[in-house]
Length: 281
Image (cartoon, rainbow, N blue to C red):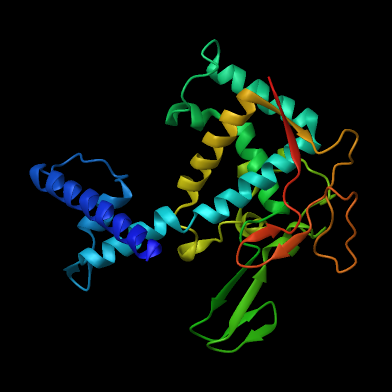
């Protein structure tokens, strides 16, 4: 009963937002020449057509719900594991904190608006390196519509192929010294072209990639920025090793009792939690 009431409240609020924006669009001349190419996601849905027909209210609500709510659990996992990697790599955390000081200057407690979030380049590298090691969604599946040949391996039509993203992140074929936490490996995006661009795909890739990737990245950067500016992130106890273990191996052994014990489900979890300490700056 409580869950139904909560869902009813969410649907009611989404209906209100969609209806409000629909009326705003109707009042504007959205067909004017020179309108922005990059429209808000809701505007795209409200003006989209499927088989020549506009989307129904229910279809729009489902898409918006997917965009907003489905990503919460993976984002929480990504933030948790990023805090873990920062706690074990103080020099990297220091560089991230210095970046925050450069961006915010004297207004160190200021709001992390969009312009500031776009300047957090090193923090984004840290997040991407964390997702290489601890992808929030460690397994993804795709079913092919037609038979395909992948480097001599024939895959029949309607075969479900499961890709283990967490194993890719620890593969020496794709990443040198994979158990070393090094955000700079993602520093040169122009070097990741062709097949190289698919070495690390925590949000999947192609037309079926996560539609909320940018939204998720902004959320993670905003929250981590707040934490980095307010707290020093410390390991559970002093003197712990980096704690990066090759989780693609069956004989993987944690470096300490405070390392996360991974549970690979729909979303990556740690059976023993993420054990860190916070010290006010």
